[in-house]
Image 1 (tube, rainbow, N blue to C red):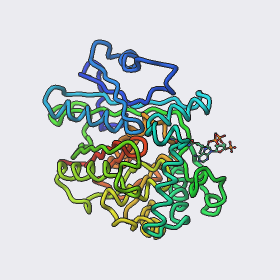
Image 2: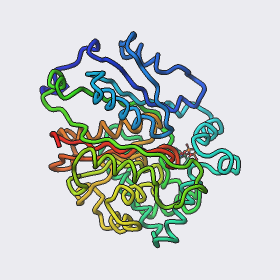
Image 3: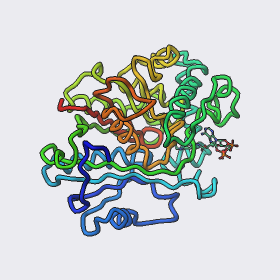
Image 4: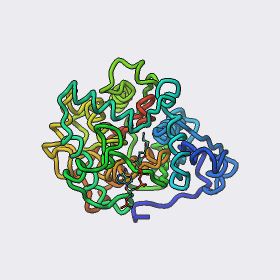
Length: 356
Ligand code: COA
C-alpha cells in the first residue's frame, strides 16, 4: 500500500462480483461462495459473472452499475482462472464450448482456427501482411519483458514469430496467447466514499458493452467485431470524451490479428489501418499510442476470467504513475477492451485520473 492509500476494512465491502469461466469446468462449482470466504465477506452478496474471456470485463460493468444505481458504496470485483492443470483435450473442449458448437466446434474449429479465419480474411480485404501480425507479438513480448507479473518475460524477434510452428494458418505458435493461471482484483467505490480509502483514486469515466452472433457465419464481417464497436461507442459516449484524449489502450489480443482488429474497431485506425500503425512503432511503448503496455494477453498471459480485471489493474498502475519501466508518460486517460470468445460479447471501460 502506498502512502496515498489508507487501507480498506473488509467490512466496508457491500457486494462482490467474480469473473471466471470456471476452472476447466471440473475442479470447482459454486465459486462465488469461495470468493466470499477467501475475501472475508461471507454474508454479503457475491455473484459469478461468466461471459467467456470477457467475464471480468462484464463483472466490472456489474460493479460499476451497482454503484451508479446508488445501491452500493464499495464493490469488490475479482477475476480468476486456473487453466494449466487440466489435460489439453479437456481444456480444448472447455474453451471450445465458448464458441459456436453446431457449425464451428463440432466441425473441428478451435479458437486459434476462428482467429486464423479472421486473419486470412483481413489479409484478403486489407492486404494485411504476415509481418504486421508478427510485429504485434514482438511488441507485446517486449512490453511483457518489463512486467514482473507477465507469463512470458522473454523478448522475441519477428523472424522467430514467422518461423514458429503453424497452429492455424496464417497464425503460428507465437501469434497465440498462452494457457495461463492467474487472478486479479479491483475495488470500486462511489465517488463520495472513495476518499476514505485513497487520496489518488482512478475514475471509471465510462462503460460500454455489446454482443454479437455466436457463429461467425451469421455475422456480416469476419474482419470486425460489432460487439467491440458498440461497446466503444457507448463507453466514449458515457465518458463524454473523444478518442484523441486517450493515451494508451489495453486491448484483447488473444491472437495477433485480434489486436489489429481491436485498434480498428475501437476507432483508433480506419479498417485495415492498424497494420501500418503497428509497423510504424506507434503502438509500442514510446510511440504515440502504446497498446498493451503490460504485454497484453500474448505475453502477460490470458487466464480467461482474470483478464478483464488484470487490464483494469494495469491501467490503475499506469494512471497513478506506478508502472515502473513500462510507464506511459503523462498517462491520464486509457481504455480497457475485453472480448468474449470470438466476439460474441465485448466490454470497453474508459478510465481517467480525474472526473471527465
Ligand atoms: N506463446 C509463446 N510460447 C508458447 C505459447 C504461446 N502462446 N504456448 C506455449 N508456448 C511455449 C511453451 O512455453 C513451451 O516452451 P518450452 O518448450 O520452452 O517450455 C512450448 O511452447 C510448448 O508448450 P506447450 O504447452 O506444449 O504448447 P502447446 O502446443 O500445448 O500449446 C497453444 C500451444 C498455442 C496451442 C496454446 O498456447 C493455446 O491453446 N493457446 C490459445 C489459448 C486460447 O485459445 N485461449 C482462448 C482465446 S479466445
